[in-house]
Amino acid sequence: MNFQNVTFERSFGISSQLPPSTVPEIAFAGRSNVGKSSLLNKLFNRKGLAKVSQTPGKTATINFFAVDGARLVDLPGYGYAQVAKSEKHRWSELIEGYFNQDRNFALVVSLVDIRHAASDLDENMIGFLQEAGLPFAVALTKADKLSRQQQMKQKAALVKQLDLDADTPLVVCSSANGTGIDELRALIKSAAL
Ligand SMILES: Nc1nc2c(ncn2[C@@H]2O[C@H](COP(=O)(O)OP(=O)(O)O)[C@@H](O)[C@H]2O)c(=O)[nH]1
Ligand SMILES: [Mg+2]
Image (cartoon, rainbow, N blue to C red; front, side, top):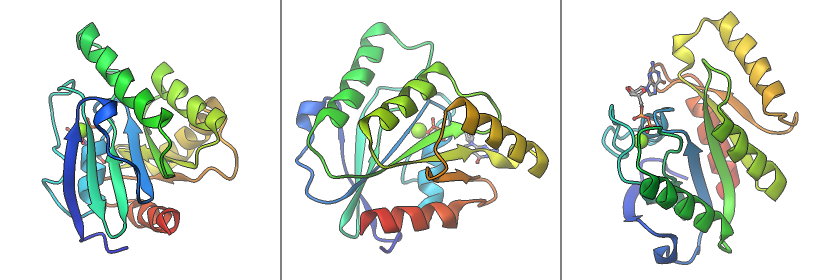
């Protein structure tokens, strides 16, 4: 998979609009502001691929990107407190709608901020992936904000809190300094085969 060959496909505001899944899909999920757009841009070396936003809580959409026989799925960021009820409803409709469809789920990359305990919504997301038996990996974002020692400590705490199996890939990463990016690329590549 050549990560340079990525192109934006389309945004969807309602799950019934999603086209059938014809290629392996690698989906990215995480709370609003966790660093999802930054990570996508870093993984694919494209600054403006996914918009990096300082103001979270914009209209929820699912964004599809095509890359060499696979598809990247940018799921709407969850958990932004200030959004209206109607928007929260849209968010859950999209996420649940996506996962309830018969799709080629190659990998779900679940993003969690390494600096903090996982939120209830992070726990729900990962609990759902575990129960559904979907292939997933956890990316701990913004590692550059912590020392190596703090990273190790937080990693262990999050493994415990989220009850992660030893075989769940866990990648400490940073879009700011590139930590974990190659490791994440390798996981995506092998999942898409
Ligand atoms: N220090 C640091 N800041 C980051 C990193 N990734 C994202 N950010 C910042 O976190 C904020 C939210 O990032 P964004 O990618 O828009 O998050 P999203 O809402 O999950 O898409 C922005 O101010 C980013 O510059 C990272 O790896 N390190
Ligand atoms: Mg974003």
